[in-house]
Length: 466
Image (cartoon, rainbow, N blue to C red; front, side, top):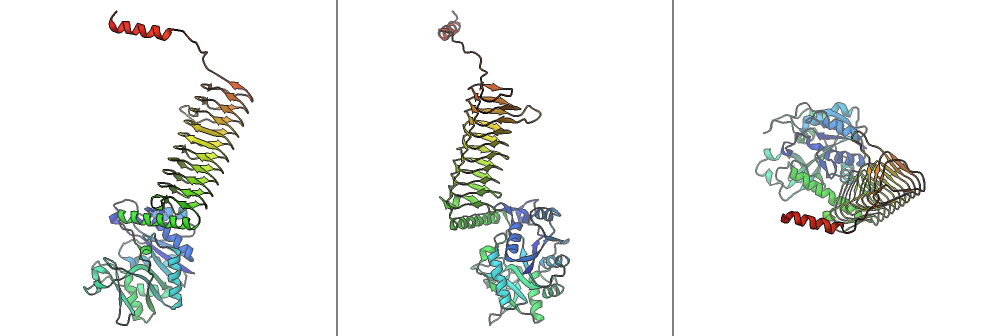
């Protein structure tokens, strides 16, 4: 076990945003949350988030999603060493290893952290730094070793000599340090650098000076430690997480027609033998059962789909719950509060809002069902509308088991239609209907033979001025 300090106080100037950088979403959840989840999954027993830019927004949003997270405010943004030092009180009396992470590294995962911890403890190190080797080290801090390969220091790129800039091994920004070593060395860090900031990297030199065991471990996983500093890097990280999620699901029995054009957020679950077509978006904790086919262009947000479902092209579902063997679409819209029981069929250009559709019922095309409760085996004819809004409030429509609704019907809520009733096509229902009735409200049809020919002849005479 270990404790974790996550640095999340930076301004993120290059993001060009009023939102704190660490709260920008990556594959559906704020980048900071990915880091917290990785630390907790790796075994962190206490997590402290250091915040600064954005005020209380970072702790507020984080506390809404996680229990037991502590927070520390870095009032002056004067370097990473001071950011870690700000967490001292929140860490409390914890006396073991402390993992230090950056809140803008959403690609870090539990496997990398667990492996890092294992190497740290196997070496009985007092301080470990996770490193990576790049062909072009760019603006990353360099890992400096002596002639024998022993770790000596970390030099920031802006302070590096020409020779040091040739080094390809870089600092990932991830550390494991024994508590006493950490806070002792932090107290000795000075701001004698080009930026006049207190660098966390300087604790290495101080720890070595005091004779502590220090090591730099090449995690061989640079991609997982990528920091996000711009919208372009945000998009890059999102695509990486989408690829990871697709790979994970394929390994667990899900078929992708084209993984590169299917977008599955980290919190989504998909059952085995399901098939996902291109341009499918699954978001915000959506759960898909087994043997479900979702064709191209579908978007599902916060939905639950049972087994053996079939979503045809172009459907948009949000906050909907579907049972087993449910078919939807093409081009259907299920809004929040839509519940479809087993064996329901919803066809093309049907919109459902805050309605419960009973088992075996169907609305095959061109209908609106809002604020309604449908029993079992109800048939909704083409062009049916539940008139649920009177300009001041919403009202409910109830169709009991076995009701047959003919095409082009309006149901003016509040209204209840009893079991087994047949509603004739073209009817407007304004009052409750008892069971096993026929409802019809058409105007009686009249046929005037020859009227159309006489009408056209009259209009032609008027046009010719006769």
